[in-house]
Length: 175
Figure: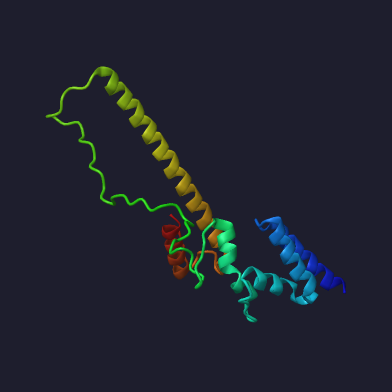
């Protein structure tokens, strides 16, 4: 008895969330009241789908009606919605995959650059070198730590030629 009351309450809560008029909601609540409690949701879906309910999948009967309620799309007798697609993803914007041309390096044939630009260029070059060095040291440090930890789980702790080969391969792949 308690489970059947819960099913009826679930159906009524479902009706409250549907964007339908008050009179249509009252009609569907009468359908719930007239159906057996265990068949209440099936009856609601059949009523939403204008009586075209399937025993296997009751929600399939009301699919076109629920789509029309959610999106505002009218559907024909076959259930197809105005031959329109629902937009479930952003539009595709295709771009070229070709690499961009690199700027030309300073050469003998290029025009002379102002002294401020040369100083700024050197500063940026130093910053880039510093970042690359820090990244390299961090990567090598992690690899060394992981390889040292790997020796702890090997049977002979990296003392045999096969284990040394395994550790070298591990270090290469870890990089």
